[in-house]
Amino acid sequence: MTKAELQKLRKRAGVKLVAEGDDFVRRFVLKDGRPRAPKHGDYVKAQWLAEKIGMHRDTITRMFEKERDGIIRRTTQGKNRRVYTTTWISLKAARRKFPDAGI
Image (cartoon, rainbow, N blue to C red; front, side, top):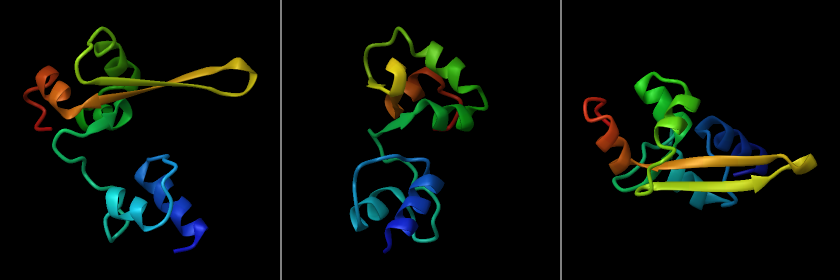
């Protein structure tokens, strides 16, 4: 698999990871190119959960702002001192908050 094809699959899956080669494809992308559904106990991005429930990403982030269990926050610094925070929410915490969503 070429680097361009791998980047295209990453963009399509909405996942930006450092993993290279077939490991990325096996873990995050189905054979037809669709993103793989998260496994039990995995964490999902706030954007994925927002699309699944039909809310905005910022709303989801604010809802889980004060939760401690099942939330991972990754902070990275971009250019010009801009700080970006990615919120990962466990499926268990999402089911707790949205029991009728069928997650």
